[in-house]
Structures are given as C-alpha cells and as structure tokens.
Length: 507
Image 1 (cartoon, rainbow, N blue to C red):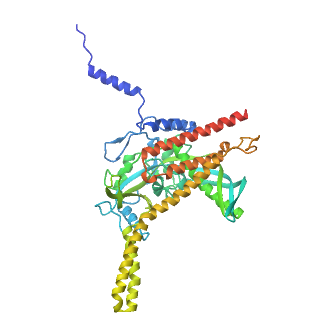
Image 2 (image 1 turned 90 degrees about the horizontal axis):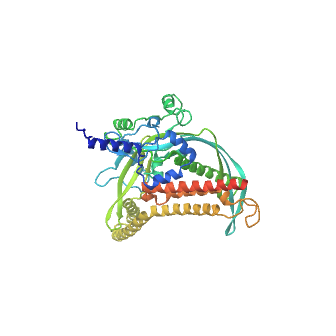
Image 3 (image 1 turned 60 degrees about the horizontal axis):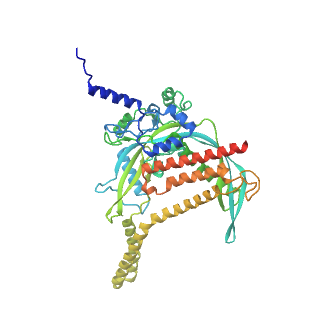
C-alpha cells in the first residue's frame, strides 16, 4: 500500500521545460535590444509584429556543415520569402578581379598577399540586404553665393522650386541597404548596383507573401534576375558547387537591421541624391558659383515595396605595409576588400599606395636623365654623372616614400574636413532661433528652425553621415549598432516633440 514516489529528475525536467516555454526568449543583444524597442516607429513595428517572427531566427554561421548557430535576433522575416542572386564568379574569378584592381593604377601594390600566402584569403558570403522600390516628388530651396571681392555674397532662395518626380526602383544603389552592422557601408556597396535587377511583381508587403513568392519569382518579368532563396543552407551549397569555395566555406549572414531602420538609411541616400540635383539646378538657374543650405520637401508616393534580398560577395583579406601597435610592436597591416560575386566590382578598405613601387619608379625616373647625360657628354664624365644620379635617386627615393606613406592620410583628412564643414552648416541652420509663428522678438514672422521639418531633416541626414564615416577604419559591429539605435531613438523623440508642439499650437 505504499505510494510510489514521483521520479524527481523527470519532474524537474518537465518543470524546466514549462518555465522555458512561458518565459520570453532572450535576444542576447544587450543594451541595443532595449534601444531598438524604444526607437521603433509604431507603423513599422505594427508591420514587423505580423511579418517578423517573435522567436529567434537561428541561422547557421556556416550554413552548409557547421552545427554552430547564431542566436542573435534576425529581422529578415520568413526565410521562405527571401530572394537573391547566385554566385556568378568563382573564387578564381575573384582573385583575378583583385589582380586587375591592383594593376589599374601605377602606385598600387605589385601583387596582393596575405602573410605567407601568395594571394588574398577569400571568404564567400551572402550579404543580407533590404531593397526598396519607391517614387518621390521633390521641392527644394537654399542659398546661392557669388564672389564679391574678398568675400562671398549669399542670396537666399526662399521660394520652393519644383525638383520633379523620380522613381528609385530596386536597380538603384540608393535603395539597396545592407542589413548587417558588421561591415562598412562603403565596402558593402561593392555588391550593389543595377545588376540586382527589378523586384518580382508581388502584392503589398505582408499580404499573402507565401503565395505571391512562387508566382512572382517564376514569372518572365523583364529585368528580374533575383531568384528564390528560401533555404540558406541550400543556397550556400549551390554556391560551393558553382566554385565559390569548398563545401562548408560559404556563409549566410543574418539580418541584423530592422526594415524600418533600413528605410531611414535609404531615405537619407535618396535625399542626398536629390539634394545634389537641387544644388546643380540652383547654380544653373542663378548663374551662381556657390550653393549651400539646400533643404528638400520630399513627398513619398503610395505603393512603396520592399524585399529581403541576399547578394553574393567575396570578402578578401590581404596584408601590405607595416603597422606599429600601442606596445611598439611592428606587425603586418591588414586590409580588406569586397568583391561582388556577380559582377566582380572591387571595393577596398583604403586606397593603398605601395612605397616600394613609388621608390622604384622614382629611381627609374632619375636614371633615365642620367643615362641620357652620360651618352651626351661621353665616357670621361661617367663617374661624375653616376655619383650625381645615385645621390639624387637616394634623396628622391626617401622623399617619395614619405609622401607615399602620407598621401592616403592627407586625402582622408581632406574628405573629413569637407564633411565636418557640412555638418557644422547643417547644425547651425537647425539650431537657429526664431518664433514658431509670427509675433514679436528677433525671430518675429520667421518660422523657427526647430519647427521647420525640412531643416531638421537635413540635420538628421548629417547625423547618419557622421555615423557612416566617423572612424570607419576601426569599424566595430556592436558599437555601430548601438550608435545607430541611439541616433534613431533621438530622431524619433525630436520628431514626436515637434508634432506635439504643432498640435498644441493648433489648439
């Protein structure tokens, strides 16, 4: 009659499973996950709550063979709706593209090596992208400048000018946004361009996408080169079979960026393109020499489309030159290049100048006049001419080596100075004081810069430019993700404050 005691280990296991089922899954992304939650817009979050699964997207780091899994959040939605481009270039084709890049300019390295390896190390990968298809209408205004002696005279164009209507379809690089924070924006741009083709004709995003997928991607629409990629492991295996690399080497990266944030970056690119067009029109229409403070009023037409697209890429690692660390230890300087797996376009970490090549060309340039002088003056002057040629070659070789070492840095500093000047101009305009609507005071009758949405939008664009360009040589995935979350959050807070203030004034 003794009662049977329950199996305690099995009971504890069942309790643990039930607790794990009830508790929400941890994102594993630390502070940035909370920041994303605060920063997400209500409309995009409403869409993502239905299209993006709540559970963690467990995509394999090595989609072909590895058992390790990336348990960070994946915002790519249902993988059955993913499309992409297959690898068109083999690994050997990518190596040839890198050699062609090295030989395209005279001061680039003779050859690219990776330490003891005689060629760069390649890592084939499918990069995640959000690709949009939108149409916008633009109006613009700004300031034009003329030379007035030692100063510039600026004239404000305060009436809106028509900038026309432009369609940015999926073939435009402005609307092709890399959904990974792991890579620099300028490097990842190597895989973008018109070769992506047009998006398959589908219904509205989030409406029966599973049914639209097969019908759209198998249609004979002109310009559609994207193919279905519902299974990352299968896509990696096909790439390995086509020569992208040995089995198990092709990686499929996760979607680490939300669609709503990708749209913010795409919008900024569109505005930068339209702002450059508006600047040219201002200069032409007013016969001016300078233009600044160009602001836009962009109207988005209905019918925006977006798809999750995977694009093929080879990430090459090679060494060139030396680098001195903080501990004064000398090591090989490591560089990276992105090679498009479809077109062979190469984008390199930094413009590299080979000091050895520069010195050799300098010595050759000094030797040619010396040989000509020796031939002209005869054998009795060979010794004098040779000594002068050797001395000049040594001096010029040293100087040219120093110049070659500092030339890329000077170019970067010049670009940075131009960007900072544009930032200062945008922030100065955004922080300008004035009355929000008529009235007395210094800003009476002038709309305050704080309430001018177009001026504040330019400030937002400058912030994203700073995020993209600042210290990009030391790109860190997690820091860039947290920085982007912070920018996104504060921009939404400021926009919400302006909307509330407008509502209060109307009341």
